[in-house]
Length: 491
Image (cartoon, rainbow, N blue to C red):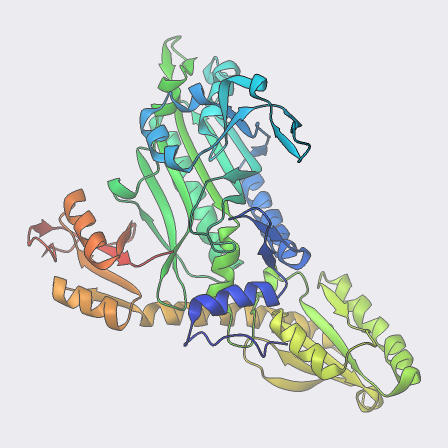
């Protein structure tokens, strides 16, 4: 199945693109820069979505939905926000088509021009805060904790499936609070939710931090993020949580009467993750044989492949495995029995390996006679036989072990590829030779940050929240620095 898959060590970008296609996750759409997420890929996204949605609701959030289209005037109300997104916005100018006079298809009807252009949402702060103005009058209406699952459009010129497409799926939380302290607490709480999801479900270790002013979300006071390291040594921003201060409340005149009866502007947050997490999942764990999925997010956790000669043996195996399947399903394991008679077992083994199914069971005539199955785990390729008696408990333990092993492997990789640099020369040498995360001192100026980016293509991924104070000197200017920040080349 994966004979045509390039090696990661030879061409990582080609390996990634081919893996997404061959594992049946997604493909390019007829619209340039867009993608079609195929059923298997969407099955993974659904598990991410359901898990995150439960986590959001556990923290008191509820779902709503807001329009795809945003009046241009709304986007103009918050200056930093419009400046940050202006170059990525798709604009609707007309509302009707008509047949072309020459009979060749349709054309835009020039008489159907909109009085005000509509922006296809790149993010929804402006349309949501315009609604909040009507929803919030008093401290009794706060906090307002709302999330929406939606698609957004950012007109990207250079695209890559899941990682960067013109249209993508995401969730965006938008909350309003009575005090600055509550809003900051919410911002940090949701960052922790994202970090927990990344590590406990994606088996992907992340570093929590705050963005530099230059990397901050347009219109935010502070942007918090989780950063992960991919196998090619590049960083990937896996989620962001923004403290908006009172910026959007002031832009849209969202005030509330506090307990003393005084009017004040509310404090806001926004936070989101997208289908970019699919790319992160692929690049964190997968190998030259194909996809490697952590069990907690795998649409199929166990696949059973029959080894048989003739229809009679296949029928006997089908009858035999029914009890096994029922027991596995009863404890919540997602299991699939591959009874296709159009492909040989070897083909099926390769196909399910390519698709990253965590555990494979193989059962033949001799296995039935010995009341056992062959068990193979995707992450290590190890095989062993296991008795049918107690198999359910064995598989549960194995799936948990695979989940934990993937996290430990990814963490070990990150630790081995995180280095300190004490000079600009050393910084450049590490980037050139190793890549990965680099912890280095920075003087805190945008000028120095942009110089490093221009000269090395490395950016400040974040100022780690757990960074200890450490007196030092900026690797570029030699000016004093109190802590190291995290640099990397990134997606």
